[in-house]
Length: 113
Length: 112
Image 1 (cartoon, rainbow over the protein chains, first blue to last red):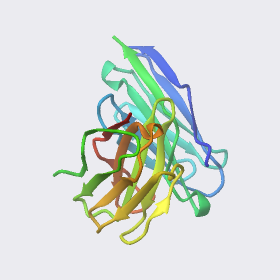
Image 2: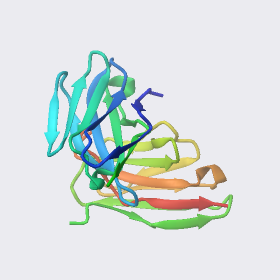
Image 3: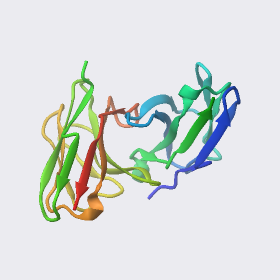
Image 4: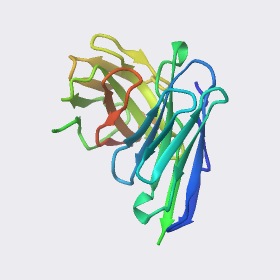
């Protein structure tokens, strides 16, 4: 069983605050790191797929960075809005015995108006 | 464009009953997956199929079987349901192993 950990488990911020959360994953046999956004009563939707060390991806106010050598990724949200409230999941895909998409347990973000 | 379709949406079973969860995708994806979601545990992989004709165990395969019927369809079978299998089940597909997952809407299963 691969260890994919996310922190914090939950987070409450005020509208307009910027925030970030962490995903840590095995630093060996790395193939890809995914980020998903999961709103209540819906299905997870992909935000980013990152494959290269040093990758930075951006989608509107949300961005992510990747460090495969030390095994972590950060997700940043700039100027949080109530509609950003969701659970953010990361998932690790590896080579060899790690060749399956393993999810972290997620960070639940609540943005208060 | 339907994407990934799961049936049923809800199901209640008694301990020992069997059932099959159906999943179909219309995106011509090669890989398909079954996950279960339990509170505080995120999504855990039950089985996946990297391509038509292949299936592999994930993290929590015990008590389940799968069939990749064709490229479109990937079913999950519970032969003898147990209360520990009460969960929300998600089917997903991706173009290839490691690429973006597209999820179905989930099946909420309760075993009493």
